[in-house]
Length: 124
Figure 1: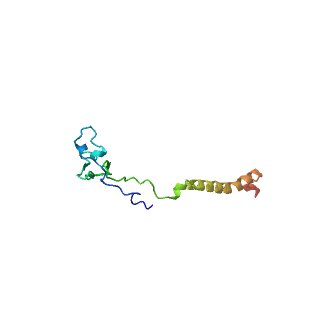
Figure 2: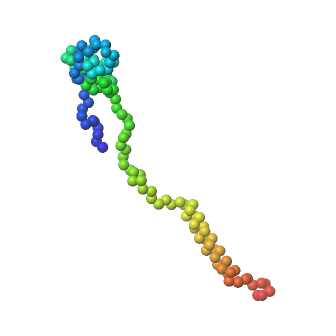
């Protein structure tokens, strides 16, 4: 993403204001005609706003700052929301153990089921 700067340049001051509005006491110290009031900017003799440090916009009504939040992160494989097969080692070892145990026990159990009995000492 190549968004290094805004789509349009940010205007700092230069908005039309009124020197007479500075003397009006209408309770709205942050109006456009007053360039945001005494803390944000002032109206010059040419009837344009001049912003103080830390304020921006044609009438000095916006704080001059940045937003540190990253709204778009880099794409990754996890964005696909795909969960592949998961192999569990303990399950594999358990399965192999059962197979091995059945391979060992099957011949013994089969002989017993077929009626095979070992010869006694006296039958040899």
